[in-house]
Length: 153
Image (cartoon, rainbow, N blue to C red; front, side, top):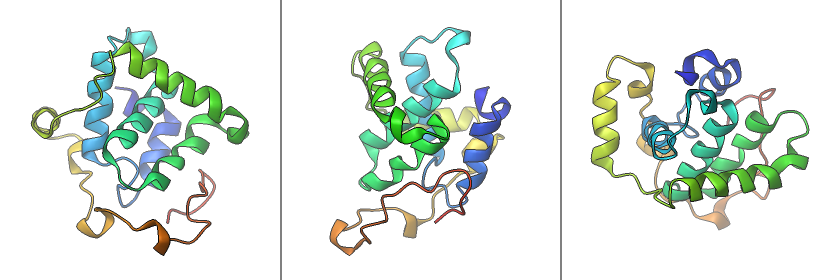
């Protein structure tokens, strides 16, 4: 599976100590998206992983700022110049799955049962890292991605 062999994805998951960027449900959704897109083995790539994870954030997360942390990991050093093409690719993947981006909790739980011994099923987000966050309470700089060379928030 791409999660265990790609060094950037592995570092991204290690960076996410509180599981706010990639908890078990977002990762389950990402896997479902890979299946819904009917990816060939050669399409199990870092780029597709991060696009699908970003789409999962679009669908499920109330805190828009969380998904921005994906950019430096997915796009590399000059990530700001590549955001537009990344978002276009995400839209193409969404169209490829016929805009079926909602994944039910039961589907995620069934997948997590299959991956019960895997590290994915252990990525449970703590309650204080969930729920709706009021935008007016945030610092104006809170939506600036930190990237691979920074400490997590």
